Image 1 (cartoon, rainbow over the protein chains, first blue to last red):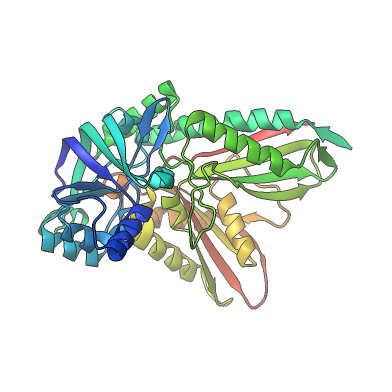
Image 2: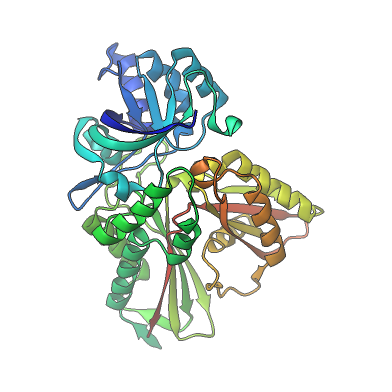
Amino acid sequence: MGESFYYSGTLLVMRDAAHKRIIEEERETGRLLISLYGRIIFYAGPTFSNGRMVIGPTTSKRMDKFLEYTLSKGVIATIGKGERTQEAIEAIKKYKAPYLVAPSGCAAYLSEKILEWKIVAFQELGPEAIYEINVKDFPLIVTIDCNGNTIRQNG
Amino acid sequence: MKIIRNRAIYEEVQEKLEEINTNLNSKIQQLFENYTGPFANEIRENTKIAREKKLPLCQDTGIVEFFVFKPYDLSFEEPLHRTLYRVVKDTYEKNGYRKSTVLDPLYSRINKMDNLPAIIHEFEIETSDELEIWMIAKGGGSENLSALYIIPPSSTEDDVINIVVQHILKNGPNACPPINVGIGIGGTADMAILISRLALFTDEYFPRLPYLESYDDLAKKLHLLINELRIGVQALGFGPTCQSVKVYAYPTHIATLPIAISVDCYLSRTGRVIING
């Protein structure tokens, strides 16, 4: 609990509107638009400045109502900022999918950690589209572990 | 009647919008000088990279709000809102600041991709030749903490303290602490919220608004109590929880006591320009 580490690999960037859309589309078509199996979701909405993707975490709590759904589709961890509801902590325990935070308000710094990006779905949503990004040495801290222990209750 | 050139307004506001989005003010940098907790390095590096490479400090560059203090006998070459909308649209496009406004808030939520409208409040003033434009660009994370409580007029200072501290305890972790807290007490519901926004601006700015008063002792008490919550930098339990608290008060109705809370994140992207006719 509270371990900080640097992650290198891919992340799936999605937030409020994309969660809502993906769930609605599955309900209508019976198919999941993109596979979430084995993915790490980063709750964020980037902007593009000087040819870079400038990005940082958004408030995770807003995605708590979608967490059970995404974890049930195979998501292995989520990244954002702030605390989560008890309901979300229960889902984290059930699926053994830890919650991590990235530094917020540090988007210029994080832009240097992004090697490449592409739009996966919902381009028309602009900053709320789903992106896949490839990051190197991306700083993270575990604030809810897969047993549901939280950083502030321990520290 | 004096006329202000709208070009001058455009240029000054543009420069200030770019400054607040890329340059963390030195007072806040000092606050982090002795901070050694989690993400200390990331926060310091971010400040440096944003300034050197002219990148936004945060990807959420907000809906821009303007508070305009305008001498009553001053006029413009075109409507002021037109100039302010144009400068926001151009500055956000040119610098790649995020377009964060959606047109229809409840149903389609289609992104306008121009970050308009800006929110503009105008106040007429009697005693100056200068046009003052205050601006704040704060993200949705801290904006979601805005709150209005209407409490009985017989309430005490302790009741107010309790409301504010409980609100921050519950929601503070989501607003990128160490936070800035603006409290508006009195007025009507809308006025309480409005003065709580003005209270997010740092010390050297006092709004030229008749009847407005500052409750400094209450602000000090709240500042101490909020820091005692130990939410900490980035809500990770280390370092300060709160940078500033300001409380503004306004006359109110005998039956009522509105308490408004506004919160800004640690970046405090606020600025002011003064333009002479």
